[in-house]
Image (cartoon, rainbow, N blue to C red; front, top):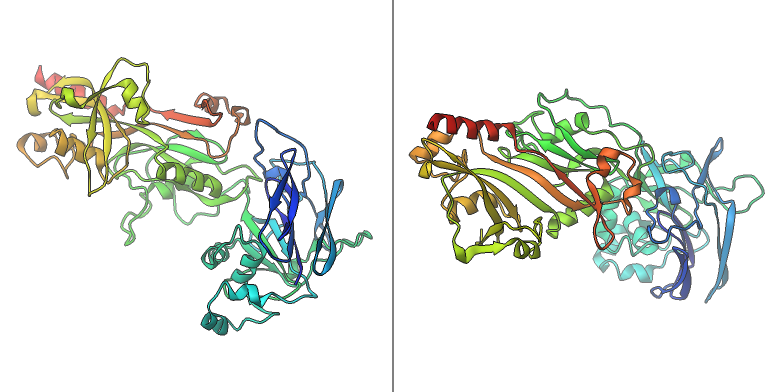
Length: 521
């Protein structure tokens, strides 16, 4: 069976033929790609309005994004910059052509084909040939014999996940990936072929809304059906909420259409526990009231903004929030790969020792990948002590000593910590177990001694006050129009756009140290 698959997505104008070598127009260059063996062809076109082009070579080129909403359906209209390729295969010649236009609007949804779900729009289209059967031999390589019998597969009837694997094996290399796309409402079925627009052009580009439905895992695909990938686009608002604004403030330190950084107060959890109990007293519940919705047309927005990582309930400070799915994936990978550089401030009970054998220079600390000025003159302490049988590394230094009547050594110490790894309660355990100087207010690791009990009562003195990470979308600082945000953006030597956000020392830190010093005097 020979199928032609038309894909309207984000980044390039591409024509592919599986099993043959084809030329691809990519950022102004013609490149050769050899695809896997199969009698299948695909035409790929990424709408420029959703694209993220390289800053080193921004070009105008093929874009299929002039989708017009007509009375008779939703039309994929092609107007300018025509290009065409002809390929040969066992079934004869086939011409795969695509006409494109470079007119775009990054802030509007006008012209995009609406999906089957509210707020979703089509970004990829896969067409199957109504005159040909599905290739069961290829399907046999994807599922076991007993599974084929259970699914009752035939040359004219297969499941949506298998169809996705046949049509786009790069994006859907496994059934689990295809099923996940269905469960997330990212796949739409158009029953039967698309229609012509009535203008005399024989190309079928019109979606009939009455034939469109959200694809479920168990839905069937027949020859001639059209599958489409649909994603949520920014609509300029959040869904209607069924709860009131939580009774705490969540200051926004940095925000754009893709992600935000907020200042989490101490005593508030990021997510509610599985069994509940927190009600609306969570960061997740407060986010729709704190951050702004992404602009209309922002690609693949999340239904609601989501935290990318966690801070413990008693810890305050900077928390990274994703507003789009690509940002969530990109930022999550940065945390997983330890590319995010974090800085914490804390107050410990007593004066922590700083042995010569664990002292390192600023240049050495910088070489370990933490956020330190390599030319700085400060010395740092290195803790390389496994936790839970896993490597755990913390770099820290003392910043200020304050006299106290009740603390160990009659001092409390303000320290700066830079974790290289992110183990459970790493900073708290390292200071309590390795340095023998637990954090003030740490009811879990302070030992419960006399001095520790006298310093309790005002919560944990630990704050995440600085974070540096790669921007998940921008390729140039010029893409950010907000002057306040630009002050936090900078370009790394490798050309990546970086974000550094910071906050001052929490007020309770200052008042606590002042109170301890006054009591001592």
